[in-house]
Image (cartoon, rainbow, N blue to C red; front, side):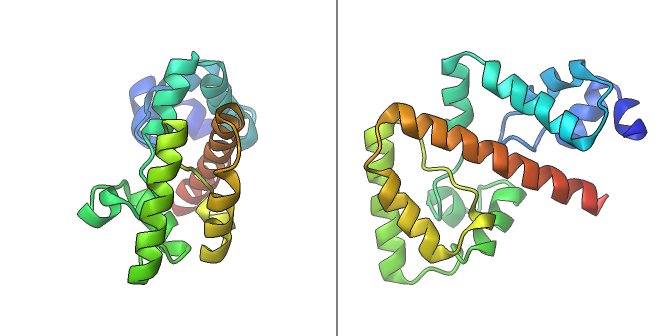
Length: 167
């Protein structure tokens, strides 16, 4: 942790600003909690920033995520992390029928809740993702807001692990 704790704010945000999808503000604020005793402590500091953010900021955090196999994926406009994550679950190779299905699910979810469906795709099969999508559509907005945030925390831990393994 010594090299991470020695980073100035700009270097820390440069390295870890992408852990939370299109939300470098999380890393920027978490930097203030240094020194981190461990990777767990660093991730906890980042999660703490997100958890204590105002509801409108948390909503913006959720809305920064792309739809699963959505227009961002088709246009090549997702972050590298999202591309790899969605590909790992087979979402980059959907049949026409599956593509129509996931597009309808994305639209229904966003219409009902006002933010995209978020799931830690690396922890699920394609079939499991479709199952969870349908199951979670029956929840209320408060439950889904919490579900999405919890999935963001799992995704960010997986991203942090992957980033540090690669460096």
